[in-house]
Image (cartoon, rainbow, N blue to C red):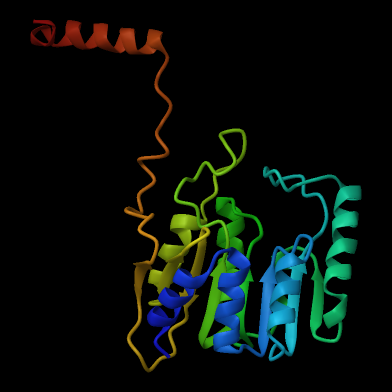
Length: 248
């Protein structure tokens, strides 16, 4: 399968995130899939409805308030219980094909065998700690030649503003993919897809199908805070005193 050609066509034809992924899964026909960060179950419901070939769909989400997660979706416990009920209702039509794994990724990941998944989708904690945990934990669960996709592949790390932890799905997912010699594609709607190497074809590289990711550096977005004015004046005075020519 020419993954780049398939994704280029699907990206051009899709008008939403759900259309993009349902088109991809219809084309690739995964039998075993997983999703990290299910929320209300809209994504899971769309994939299960569009892809009858999916025999098992693991739904991974703690559906609880986490004290050390500084993101807008970290709501209170009662709200999470309502969200969990909605996720179950939205996917009830496929109850025989879903596997509900309620817990954080590290709490439940051992319930999925290594190299057992054809496709996984990561839409959980997008902080540095969260995306490192999710991608590294999920990567060995994908079979050679399988796919690992995800959401919030934002070129701007300040997705939710400076009051919240930066979103670091990009560029971390790129670096992970390159480290395992996989090819990673930047897709519309802030999506990404890692095509896992299968051992027989050369892989590796970052393919930007959107033109929105010109560089992988963080320096342009994350700078050390400027020193207070008093410190800068003292430093300038010290420099001029120690180096007389600097004041000329």
